[in-house]
Image 1 (cartoon, rainbow, N blue to C red):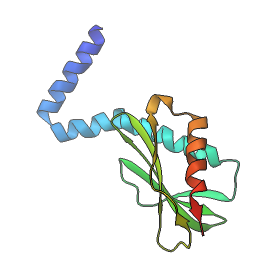
Image 2 (image 1 turned 90 degrees about the horizontal axis):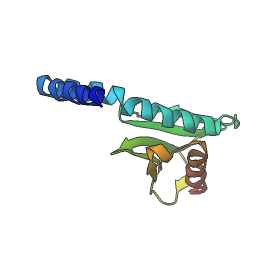
Image 3 (image 1 turned 90 degrees about the vertical axis):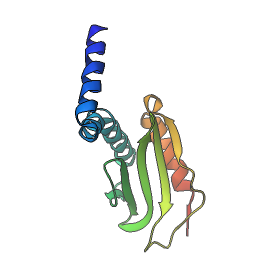
Image 4 (image 1 turned 135 degrees about the vertical axis):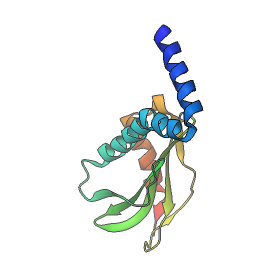
Length: 132
């Protein structure tokens, strides 16, 4: 407990001294690794499918966005992000793709509940929404 109190007080003081810098460092320490884990799970789900590729395009530090290429053909965008402890995976139509997407609601779960099975299930549902 004393270590938690010390960490909270360090955070409080760091935020007072330089709020924007504190937020960047806090994000790098907390959400950054969580987002990297989500991306790793998505890549792992597709690992056995050589014809599928997630090509990063249009990402920011807070949202990782990929173009899903199948047989090197652009299909849809897959976005992965965190918000208030929740993990999100969504899809959207992209330019230069003849494929359409039915439904835009992302999959969402508490980050602690996200695992390989959840990610594969979320991607499976997103893929099922794609048509030509």
